[in-house]
Image (cartoon, rainbow, N blue to C red; front, side):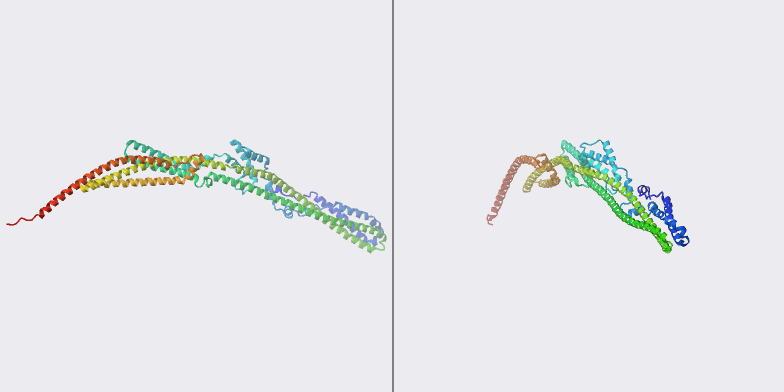
Length: 595
């Protein structure tokens, strides 16, 4: 048996007067049996001792009654009757073991008032406590650990401290930390965009058209990458809702709320279950005590009735003996029978008294150990009464602090972060649209110019073919080169349109967050394509106006050349017709007669 078991074990009753009482019992029995045996011997020797023994035999009846009374008053059973701690626990149907009670009573005393004061302080404060004071309070809450179930998912002190600390967390910093990886990527792309802008500006300053176009394409690609990086960050904010991410700060808050509810629920359930078990054991003790009290009272009544009957019979025998002393001479045989019967009755009395005293001692022994068990149970229930008040305060603290978890603040911060990133995205996307549009307009102008040159070369080629101009092959080569350039420019325009479409798809993927930002700010939303489209149309009209004036002059000159060629062709045809007519006339003249 362990030390704590011995400390809280039931102490069996001790009998320090056992030897003295046994000696006293022996003397009482010996005195009684001696009188009985002497009476029998006297009766059997009646004939020989009739005259010498009749008077003492008659006078000692009162001594017999006194000895019987002394037996009733002084006889006690001072010896164990078999009651042990295990037997008492089984008899009282105790569910809680001695080890469980010892473990409960050996727990360090809990300052319930102090714990409740700490919980009220953390619950009622509206400003953040000094760090040192909070840590001291959290350490004091660790006194709950020995009193909580071992299977708690999280310590109550840890849960209470975390519920307080989360009220003062910098939500924007937490969300920014979750987006730090994407911020780093966007910063790298932004640096790349700055380099592309500087490269484009240097190319424009130099004036090299090919280098400007190459730098412009690189600038478009850099702007697209920057828009894509901004869109990724917006996707992170809008896509799955950062509050539902498993590893995010919102998930930590949800886990804390769930752990707090589970811990306080499990703590209260365990406390209620153990308290109910102790109450059931106390009820069983009281029930068994009532049963033993009833049995004790019944046995005591039966014994008292038997004792009264036996005492009355002994008194009657003594009286009869006195009467028979006078008649002994005539009734010697009857006297001997009476003395033998007297012995039987005395032995019966001794057996009854011995059994009764042993039963009474066993009853007292049970009552003593049952009182000890009840005292242990009452101490344990007093412990649960104290813990019940603490449980109510803990539940109140957890319920209120859970409602104060900054869920709404998280939503507001998410909206604020969305507005910031939407502004960055629109700036990047606007620059991308403008950059693509500028190069597209330039390429459209270039394509118009090449088409005009191609028409002029076609005209020159056709004219050269008609006039057998030796430069006809040069016109054909120049026309082929112009056509190849037109194909290249068309390919660039198609690539720019595809890039513009890709940028538009990125915009559409984050359009919800962008529109929400403009809706919250009350600013009307204008799409960058719409804004730049007006500028590009105006520039296109100016180019068309300038080119049309040039085209009209060019077409007029071409028409004049074509008229000159037609007149020349007509003159040549007339000369050829005249020559043919003359030749035909010569052939038709009659031949000169031969002489």
